[in-house]
Length: 115
Image (cartoon, rainbow, N blue to C red):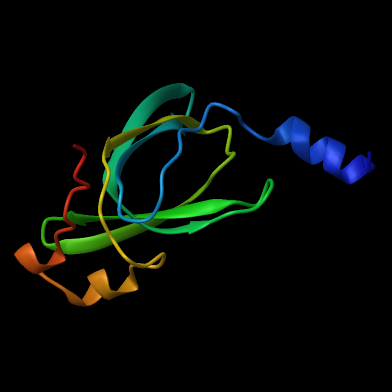
């Protein structure tokens, strides 16, 4: 096995749940402030997933006081405590950048129907 691939496999996390664009997720991040450490939750819709080995990322968008906030998370970051999938969304695209131009009820994502 290639040495680089072996090192990348050691760095990858295996406890990440399966999610895709349109899903509503809670990302629990470990925040270090001085000597204290705490968990901060960022909940929003996944608008982009970039697959890969150790350089995989996903972008989460939420509305905070009427302002859209987007954050890009490295998938295999040691600062991510865990990820919860709150609701699966039904979308037909992999990149949901059009949500940036929508407001209010128009920016909602329909839930995935499970029978």
